[in-house]
Image (cartoon, rainbow, N blue to C red; front, side):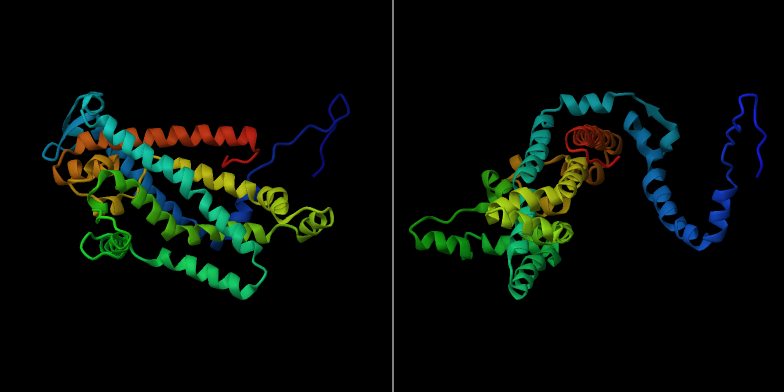
Length: 318
């Protein structure tokens, strides 16, 4: 296409048209059609239900419907904040997730580094298979295993305690033991599966870096610290951001199955409270407000951690 020169002698800039985009869509229409299913899924199951969030600000009545229900503003949020169980629910939810980040998040990284350092392919595959298998155990079976192993009446753990002269401990009925058991069993069940992405990232580290470090006299620990960890640092940061993004969400099903009246002081979290109060007791507006409060905290943490990671580690989701 020819352009006429302006008075300065420079051809004027032509805005790129959309014909190229539509031509690409027409040529590769089959790939773009594949996007319709995930887009429709998000619209129907993620964005569509957001219409119902307004019941958090209403006194919802199924007979009147969402639009016909009385508007109460922030009353449901104030009721939750002023309730006697607010700080207990908040502390249990935050503490379980905080301890999980401190103890459960680093374990898959350490496991991946360990597997990466195993020179024998046979032993490496054996370790991987042993650590992967617990991931495929269902939550119901996992809680059943915990109940059997930790039972005060003939459970293997209490048998060992009695063997050393101790008295049986009712682990699952104790509020003090609930969080260690919950987090510890989560680590055992998920560490192998979560290490897969770190193992994949380690396989992409340039082997020449290890050879150069070895020639410089670096020990194995030094090679891990200065080569392996920097090589997977972007992956670690991204997964940390994603974990913080659902910081306030706890394993609802597992906690509900492990929960009883004796350990309620430590096991009662926001997600289980929303289930028992909203679904079983029918207080939809109240629990919708609690769920919205939970989601807003998650969103704020996600934005803050993503911004911090972008400034410090130069890696972020956006």
